[in-house]
Amino acid sequence: MVVAEFRLMTWNVENLLMVGTEGGPRTQEEFDAKFASLAAVIDTQQPDVLALQEIGQPELLALLQEQLSHRLAHSAVSSQPDGRGIRVAFLSRLPLQAPVAIHRFPDGLAPVQVGDPPASSDQPLRLEHMGRGALQVTVTAGGQDLVIVTAHLKSKLLRFGQGRFTPRDEDERARFGAYALHLRAAEAVTLRSQLNQVLAGDGASQAVVLAGDLNDGVDAATTQILNGPPGSEIGTAGFRVPDQGDGDRMWNLASLIPEAQRFTRIFRGRREVIDHVFVSRFLVTLVTQVATAMAVPGELRSITEHPGEEVGKPGSDHAAVIASFDLPNES
Image (cartoon, rainbow, N blue to C red):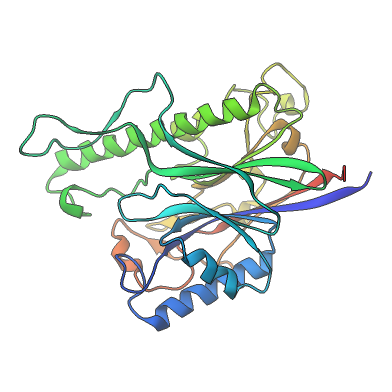
């Protein structure tokens, strides 16, 4: 059978911002070093589609495209950033079709509390939409349409009132931990609701991908929401046995990353997988390789609760995840 290789890459590029922006590079030299280090990884991996998280001003995408020798001529960027102005985006070798903004919580999901009530009001701060909008696009590879969603869920790194990264006391730490968890769970439900609409129970014949920084591990409750029906996990006896849940399931490819590479962030010396690629039944049977890549091969900076320590550094504090597929070539 003739096949067409398709490579998807997802990467949180950590505060890709203009010089002088909060959290961004302080000098033009730091800015240039950041772009050069990111471009080197992308050029090495040569993805067909690149899902990006932590993009600041939309014009940065064009600047990144100019840095690349691997041509990714097509772009799409979310118009729904968070309060700091960071958002998700795509660069692609293939035309990006039918963009869909994913932002508001689905029907039936109530607003969630995301902060302490302001002193002048008894009403807590609530959101009825994702903190950072997700973005869906469609590409055609080898005659096969692929629907790809990228997202960046609420961080586990807590930001307290007045922009503090240190709580006033342990009660405040506990409250804001709950706020973050509630929002991240609601965002996962929002994504899963969108996937339900796209899959429409036909995941065995539809190519659907969810890729991004989900800010939680493989077994976390928020991440598990995205799986859909339980069962048939990769590596289990049930994986190769079709069942009624296959049309709605999404499979997390994290277990296919070689064990030595199986981390996408290091927090206080602990390796974590918080950047994920989920695929529908049709695609999980076509995976040829899943790997990670970072700005310095084999090395990733260990971070703490204080993101200001990362300001001005090149590369990213996340590893990229790259998934390759052999698609039946119907063109």
